[in-house]
Length: 255
Ligand code: G
Ligand code: G
Ligand code: MN
Ligand code: NA
Image (cartoon, rainbow, N blue to C red):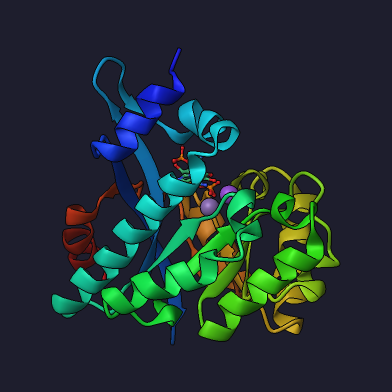
């Protein structure tokens, strides 16, 4: 349906746009918006707004994922810098495909963009799935270490589904565990799911990792996660993804 040439053009001609989904973090006894996840979309001239599921596989196969990710990262870092000039201390999280964590030049390329927009590395978190670590663990470890030494956050995304390996939590230098939305959505009906979520939070904390739950869709889930001690929450109950320009007004409503 979509060709590689079209995707190439989309990257070059800025048909790709980045939406941001706010994430709230516990501070004292309240939840504050402190960061947002960057989620790419494609304003396709013929097909309308496309979501990542419709073009990321092609981007991965064709190698265009490298340029696509550089685009999203630059957008997110520029955005963090812009929020800073507006007096907002907001960070961003960007999804990294497995390919990028095998690219030895990536950490320095990223550091250059951070310097260009005068953004502290601590304001950026990279979300990677477990799949990223399987191919060449030593190379991935090298790259993760270079990123962590700079101060960039590293989140183990989609945790709790698929074949999430517990050993990754101590073998790789993650700073956060991101609990998958599928598990979160089952808390309400399943006591067992709730027990698993509680155990993930406790395990992560014992390993000095922070926890973020995604796919928080209703107030029972929110309250359960708050009671578990989960550090950060994201999901439609808090806010859906939105253009960056809408984040500021959302914060005013929320905080
Ligand atoms: O809202 P949503 O349909 O956008 O996102 C679906 C999935 O697509 C997310 O879970 C995320 O893993 C992936 N995704 C979204 N944006 C990006 C991106 O910029 N880069 C990569 N590699 N994955 C992304
Ligand atoms: O990287 P990744 O899986 O983590 O990105 C998050 C995905 O989850 C995006 O596709 C986003 O649109 C979607 N999402 C965000 N909040 C919710 C929610 O509350 N419920 C559901 N079902 N999906 C959500
Ligand atoms: Mn993610
Ligand atoms: Na996820």
